[in-house]
Length: 167
Image 1 (cartoon, rainbow, N blue to C red):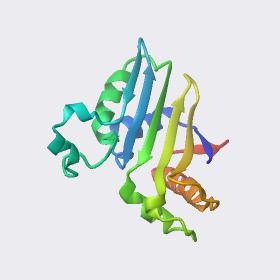
Image 2 (tube, rainbow, N blue to C red; image 1 turned 180 degrees about the vertical axis):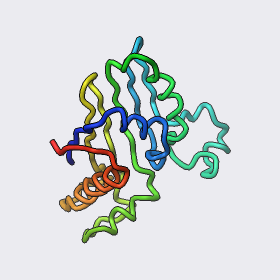
Image 3 (cartoon, rainbow, N blue to C red; image 1 turned 45 degrees about the horizontal axis):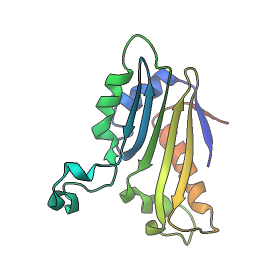
């Protein structure tokens, strides 16, 4: 787990909300504080779907909504002349990318053991920070997946020319 301070908040927000850079993520949760506090639970609602649709992986491949789907809603809540008082997004890397992260290092941990590679994005009104995390289905003493995820996030930001400082 690492914490990163984004040094150009405006540029990052453009990439997050107006670009496709983060479309390989799922949204677990969003809390946006502007003139009201808006909370989005990214878990898909089973009551919305028929039982057949709920089981169909073509219609509903993930338990969480994709960032690509929710991004325009968050953009509409944040855009305007005033910056938000704060916000917090909890994103999960789409599971199909997990194996490629694990292949970058020497680890016995396999893709099915990883519940999620998580990226927490927090803005407190002045500072924007990213905090990484790896959630596993069971305890494993090998912390290599955490390190590989930390490295992948740094490479992701660098490739997109998003400036950051390690905290």
